[in-house]
Image 1: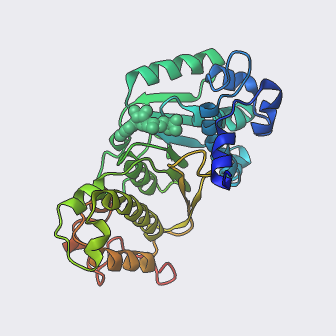
Image 2 (image 1 turned 120 degrees about the vertical axis):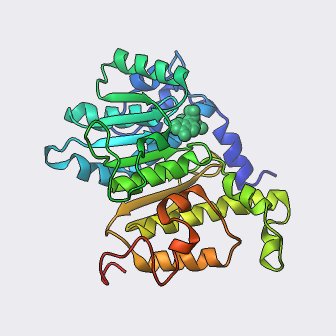
Length: 316
Ligand SMILES: C[S@@+](CC[C@H](N)C(=O)[O-])C[C@H]1O[C@@H](n2cnc3c(N)ncnc32)[C@H](O)[C@@H]1O
């Protein structure tokens, strides 16, 4: 007899006929765009892989609704940045739902692969999405300065939201760093596979009892990925974000399913920083790029002299 998970997996492999596709759509979402993105087949069906992708994108777009309502309020013209945008599915959907009806807002997609950039630009032109912009560059390239007080800008504009759906390995960290440095009101990342911390742990001596957590390569990979996300969430909190970590969709739709959603609520949070420092002190030294860039070397981040400094006692 099939268990619940097997049933769900079987169901998620089915093609959705054109007559049922509307059930998968958000209000105001068109099948025409999904067809142009090749998420729907020519005869309007949704195959299993596209359905999984659409579920992730739509769920994320839905979760961001309250943030986008704020960003688009009062005739504002927000800049939404998609880091590691790939084909730009998420950006195109956000454009259709928010930028097109309001006539405001820009979706800036950062993508390193020239073929994907060229194709997405063609699509944007075909659709008349003038403010769906692709820059062929690495996410980190938009963070030119190590100075925390010099926020990254694009064409003189500040960044209002950073999204990164399955940005590879440390590209997710670059997206987080970019968002933090920009002071973006909202940062939403769904990390991809993560190898940096597992690599760093592999080079450390395994001391019992904690070392048992990463002695075997498969455990090291899983533990490394979990630890990375714990550090990412803590770091966002230290920089004044309120953070929720949840599943994006059911696990039958994607194994890369952890959503870290961060909303800026204060300048800094000294307590969160202290907790992160305590966590790191119990681990082997992890010179993770994200930590180095935002907190500096271990010598410059003792618990008594935290960097970044909380703005006020209330912030802590
Ligand atoms: C797994 S795909 C996800 C694409 C898209 N976000 C989605 O969910 O469909 C990751 C994309 O990130 C791009 N990428 C990887 N590292 C990057 C970096 N440092 N800066 C910009 N793009 C990057 C890759 O070329 C690839 O297209």
